Image (cartoon, rainbow, N blue to C red; front, side):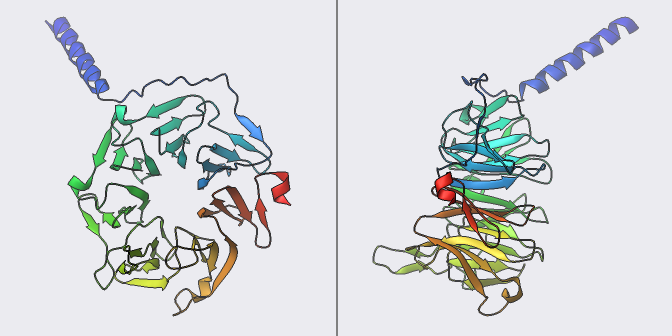
Amino acid sequence: MMKYARLYLLLLISVFCLCCGQNKIKPHQDHINYTIKDTVTAYGPSRMVRNIKQSKNGTLLIAASFGGVFSYDGKSFTNLTSKIGSRRYWNVLEDRRRHLWFATTDSGVYQYNGKIFRHFTTREGLPSNCIFSIVEDKAGHIWLGTGNGVSRYDGRSFQNLTTKDGLSNHSVHTIFEDRTGKLWFGTDGDACVYDGKTFTVFKNKEGKPFHNVGSIIQDRKGNIWFGASIIEDRKGDTLLVSGGLWRYDGSTFTKVSKRGASAIAEDSKGNIWTTGASSTNGVGNWVLARYDAKSLYDNIPKVTEIMSVRKMLCDILEVNDGSIWFGSMNGVYRYDGQTITDFRSKEHQK
C-alpha cells in the first residue's frame, strides 16, 4: 500500500506541475535570421531617436524608430536589432536579469537575452501591439504602456488594465514608479497615478487635469516633475491651461514654466533638463534647456538654452561621465558642457 501511495503522490505532483506550466506564455516564433551579425558602425542612427538608456555596464542603449536599437560603448555603435529588421522602435529597457526589451509601436515587444529573441504581441495577451513605454518595477514586474491600456508582465502572463479599470485614457505615453511604489501614467488624455488598487487623475489647484503628459521623473528631494500640453480648440480658445513644466511636492502643484517639456531629466548637480517647444502653443523651434538647481524654487528660475532647432527634440539622459545625451528627429546628440556632437556622420560631427 505504501508503494502505491507514493506512486499516486508522484502522479499528482506531475499533473500539478503540468497544469501550472500551461499558464506560462510561450511567445510565437518569428523568422529571425540568427546568422546575420549585428551591424557595427562608427556612427549612430540617422532616424528619430525616441529613447536613451544606460545599461549596468555603462553601454548606452538608443532606440531609433525604423533605425534599430543601438548600443554605444564609447567608440562604436552596434545595431542590436539587425536580426529582427526594421520596426518602429520606441523604447528600450534592461531588466534586473540584464535581459533587453525592445518596445515597438507596430510589432509589440521583443525580449533579448543576448542570444535569443522572444516576441510578445496580442497573441500572447498584450492589449495592443503599439508599445510606447516600458519600465520594470521594484518587484521585477515589467509594465508596458500601450495604445490600448497598460499591461503588467510577471514572467508568466500579462495583466491588462484599461479605462474599464479606471485608467484615465487608453493611450499611455509614459510610466514612472516613484519611491513609494506608486505608478504615474502620462496618457494621450489626463495623467493619473495608480496605488495598486485605484487610479486617480491628478489636477492643479484650479481643478484642471494635466493633459498629454510625455515625461515624469522624481528628483533627489522627492518632488515629481512633469510636462503637460496646452489644449486649444479650432478657434484658438484655451480649453486646458495646465500646459508647461510642473513640480509636485506631495501636496501642491507648482507651475515652474510655461515652456513645453516633452522630456525631463535631472542631472547629478540637481539641474533640471527639458526638451520642448519654445512657445506655449507648441509652434516654433524646439529647445534643449537647463533649469539651474540654485534657482528652481525662485518665482522665475534661471533657464539656459543649450540648443534650438526647428525639428522635434526627444529623450534626455545624463550618463556616467556627466555628459548629456538627447534624441532628435534625425539622430542622437551629446553635450559635454561645451560642445554638442552629432553622431550621424563624420560630416555632421564637424
